[in-house]
Length: 73
Image (cartoon, rainbow, N blue to C red):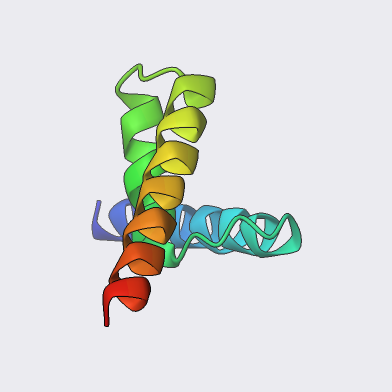
């Protein structure tokens, strides 16, 4: 039973490693933690396209804040 659990853990790690490599090839800018959160959200039923849109909007807002902070400094 322990070996089956270890096999599942290893399979999950390999899957995440492959997803991270695909993410890097596509220049998504997601790190392992962020990608892991996105995968879990999709597994919970979140629409991947909607999630992508939210991430893009958050990045735009973050860049806008950084730009405005740099202008006022």
